[in-house]
Image (cartoon, one colour):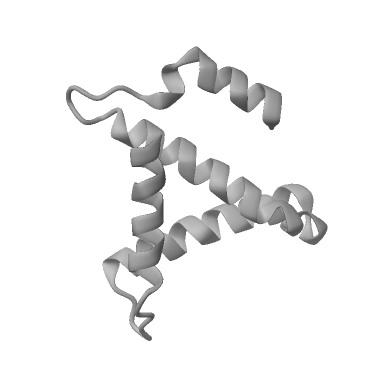
Length: 92
């Protein structure tokens, strides 16, 4: 889970460190993820639901990167562990 946290932090810091008029590929990927989650929250909960956006975006990125790390040979998906599922169920 630490690897997932570090990967998310590195992606967001590196993609937003030097914002350009014409975005780089990394900046475009980060903006695309941001806009996808923002539009989903806005469509589902309306503008009043945007106060939950940081939490929803964090959960989305955690699940996305946890599952992407599972694609690496020899690695496992963090979300396949039952304790992570129980933690999501209890705290979310």
